[in-house]
Length: 173
Image (cartoon, rainbow, N blue to C red; front, side, top):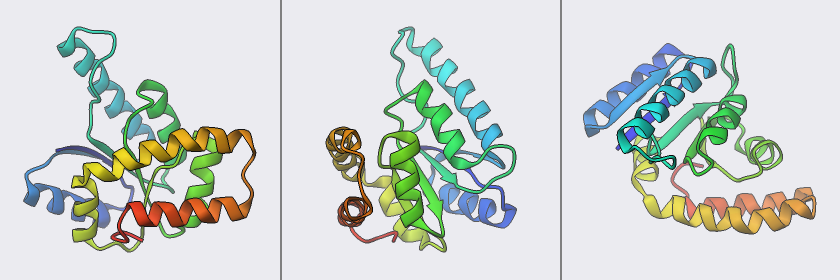
């Protein structure tokens, strides 16, 4: 599993490092959003060069973003990453997941995986390793395209949050 994490709090970044190292993940950790995008671009270019095709494979299995970071917040980083690879799996870590859901729909035009701080490391690992979560999320995002055209209200966003909780099997929020 190849993971990119953007987390500005050094203690939390160290806990990611320990958690992913223990699982044998190939991972990189950025301490701000700008560094995260720089790493992502470099890995995307490398993947395209190695693949030799214009449609290169995703450089990471998942990108985990803290929302509040210096230089560039998680939402801005996600936008730039999705411009490079629109199908990149993005996971946000935030204390307020309800706001993140609304922000992801409005700013990214899609639903992303959400993990509430503080999180259970085991639940996070299970979610990262559960490919079915992302496949179901892709289906939700196709339906979301129609919903966005209808300008969703807060009740519809609450329904999306409930559906996302179900997909993520209640592990992370």
